[in-house]
Image 1 (cartoon, rainbow, N blue to C red):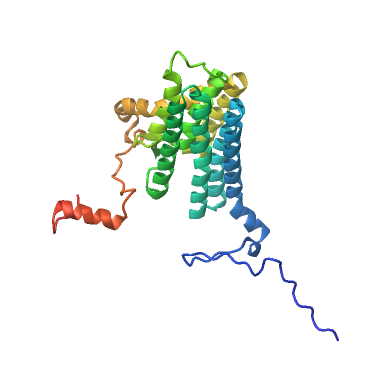
Image 2: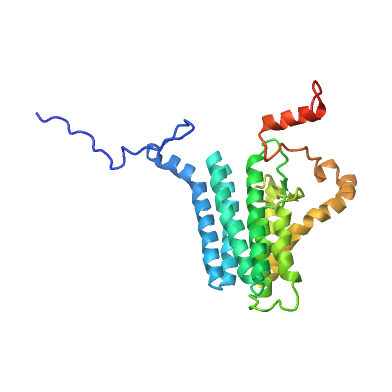
Length: 309
């Protein structure tokens, strides 16, 4: 009678991922195929986002500015999709948040910075370098600030600062609208390239609130679905008829809605009620100092025995 054959050992069974914090690391091989797909689905969109951003950089250095801009548009779609899929399948996680931010830094920080350097200001080496660095620094600050100030109780209708995909969309839409201007096209005026290179980057690090329009991306109810459907239909028709102008209207219109919202807030509050305007924003904790140090500093300012204001 033959003994039972020992179980076959996998080639990499002796390799294990170990978390430095002590958190349990579960191998994907331990999950069922359905669970594995649920966990990895958002990350697949994030990887495509990162891949499109890197490809945009490589094409920008080759002078293929239109294709580089198209790939930034692909990254924007993938960035919207990965968040939507993660919420849909219930696979949101701190790892996914950090992975998404790293991909966004490539697609909406590094790629637009390279386009600013190679397309917007090619005849001004020092200015183009400064603009590219300024854009990348602002995008990194914007993403880092977002990661450390995520508040589940915050009003999800608004972003604090211009989102990095929306800032990148300004560069992308301008390239489409101006149809690949050749080197030297801005010799007589620096207004357009300077605005495109610096203004969206600066808006990323401000505390100005921009609508998130998550009700359009995740509609609930019949009226919301109809509104989303009409908006998508209008965008598709516009992109078919005139993609450059449509992209320009969407990108610049999104930026203009912030100051227009501030100017029209009193009238909207009177006519539509307090829910139609942004609520007062509470002061966020410091993004540079640990919370304990912030509390100690506040107590030092207020004096012993006095609660921090």
